[in-house]
Length: 539
Image (cartoon, rainbow, N blue to C red):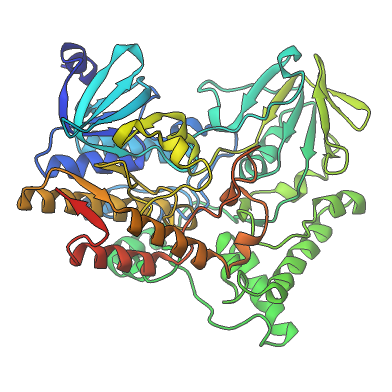
């Protein structure tokens, strides 16, 4: 019987744990919960597994972590049997990997697809969560685990006149499953973040004309993507245990060659040689060319100027090159990885429209109005990112003790403990939630660390006869202060970015991720558990 059939016959089914989201977090949480003998169910809004990689189907979508590292490590058999084909995997390949995992570990029978959770409320008298979803589904569970992802709620700007537009409208974070044919059409892309930087070169090859509406230019590093060398793949598989351990000892959880030197302590010619080597290698580890690029503004400027020189060397029109050249801190916003982005602006069918000084006034029936001109387009692509970290959790009506709503508790600051739990919300867990390293790390290993910690806690509670756990208000307060203290020295906390919620109108400007690094964070979590789950109240 399918999982849909099971749930239909038990609309008020009771579970040990209900997991929201069937991305990489939800799949692994289900696997670990089953291993503990728990009755578990995953609820997923999409009609397939994969989470972010189910929705982000836009042209050119790829991971910016190398495929040999962007994968599960809990099963060596899985590591050995799966063969990635490219250095940076495409969305399609990552989605196939997620489906392979779901099939290999027989997870689908405990996943209900095409079902969106709308409400989760803690019943204090019963000590259980009541989870409500569309289509009349109501479930109860001792534990509720949110595997809803950090980048899963698309940010659609509220431009005046959008409802009047007669053309097709797309968002990179909610791309259609079927191919979108832009052949010969006039297309406008709004936004120049990571998704846009990947999509723009692909779209430009099809369209009659492409208009790129840019408010803020972004730094991007060539991916230098290529098919994986079979010998490299074999060496990696043979040494996975060592490589994974070395990655865990680095702040990002991604294995790379660490340079302990300061950018300011070496001669200019050596500094340039290091930057050039990183540029030719490609990828986001460019920002690790020297140890102080995200802590020292003068050091950071040496890297920023190197990238600006590269832009001017590639882009033929000096005015366009100048508009594409960022002058903020490199790495302050998400550092992007591209394939042919700068070169795209040499194409005669591509126009860069600067909306930094003349913002978009409105969307008309025919196109985009800015600077007194209307750019007529047949289709609009919004590459405007996500309501990151908290958006998806706040979109669900989550209520804890006394009916307290999570979105009210988080109205000013996303208070939590370890990025995992929230005072006032017993038995609720947020995988890679705000206050955890999450988006500053290799996400799948970060997910595994959180899931393993939660699973170990479940085992501990069962062994000790506990059925309820909640972070104390004091522990939560201290953790929020620690996250802020850790972020203060970093240049990443000093500019408007989605790390601070700056891309969402009215959202509090709070540096949300924990930037203390993977080894430090993992040690804190281990110590909390070893100390009898310090900072938690168990009953």
